[in-house]
Amino acid sequence: MTGSLRNHTALIVEEDVGFLLWLGQLLTEAGYRTIPAQGFRQAATFVREIGVPIHLAVVNLGLKGASSMLRALGAAHHDLRIIAIGNPGKEVPAQVPASAILDKPRSSERVSHEDWMQRIHQAVTDAPPLALTAVGNRSS
Image 1 (cartoon, rainbow, N blue to C red):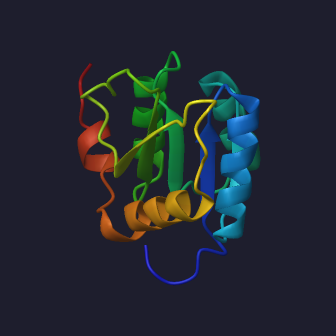
Image 2 (tube, helix red, strand yellow):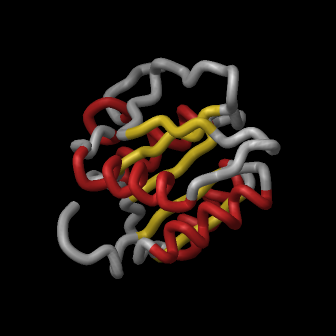
């Protein structure tokens, strides 16, 4: 995934509206078109209706339906990168292959815009697309 991100689309699935909007702004500034959703049912509807390739999925894995949604996205979008958003103090499920795992900041924590931009950029540029081989071939 090299070159301009202008034609790349990021799907963000997060139930916390404030954090969802913040991530959307961050990814828009990085050059992505963003599709924000508060749950996987809404995300599936948006992806189906919009009909564009998804290059990045930023997903709160604590939401119900994460594994099956990522399997479907991985099968349909071969160069998908996954950034898992973990809830502080909870482990990210091992069955989800993520290019990066970022812990959601606590409400009292100051969030570094630059740090998140750097982590997202590194996950997108340095990590191989994992979704098709690791998520798509799971039988769970």
